[in-house]
Image (cartoon, rainbow, N blue to C red):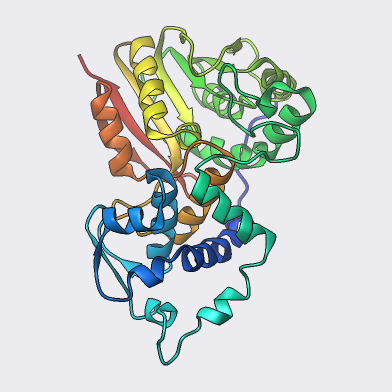
Length: 345
């Protein structure tokens, strides 16, 4: 068995470089959709601003968070929004108007695609004729059901898991936990790292059949095979009874309603006093950054039915589904951290 060890050098900046294109795409999209025109005459209530742009709540949250994180607009979520001093350079008719310069990017394919995504609120396929990337539900044309695409997409996420999992295993409080469900566990790397760190722990990794084929290969190398089970299933069925559930980079693939459904199913599967851990990226509660997470939120929005959420949003979801948030755990890597909760009642 080869133990999982995180790299000594933090490669997070590489992830930020990959996601950097979304900054240009969102800025150009905001300009074309009329965000700065709408703010030209002074502060505007957020609900009126969203309606004026004709955006549904999810695309608005992605766009508005990014624009605030770019320091072009300011205002608390749900409150009045106004342009910043930097954003004034994008108002129509200004003496130092640079709208035309930003507009030079508006013909770029990525900008056109982002505008369409914001208007439609529908995820795009990662590749033509491949189906929706990373997510699956019954009746969905999902890339995770095809061997080649499932392997490519699952292994695309493996690098991040290898980087984050050993740190998560060091900080996750699993004292007294005998059985943990790694829900939507993909490669199973997180579950393997937790089992390596906790010799008395048994882990069940639940995912789709094509994804678990990759997990089985990695389990042969990293183990411990005698304490990590691979369970075929999906997020919308019944889960095995367990003492703890790990949701590592899962909920950000889904909208708030679906997240609540998944959390309700977790509550049902957990034994009394059971623990739930959300390992994910977190926007700040003011929904105005950090910029690198706001750009990742745009990536999630583009390819899934979700986006990045704030700690406050997750705590509200947990409270509404019968959990009591207990602590925020130290960050891992790639802007991720973990939020812990306990099953109430």
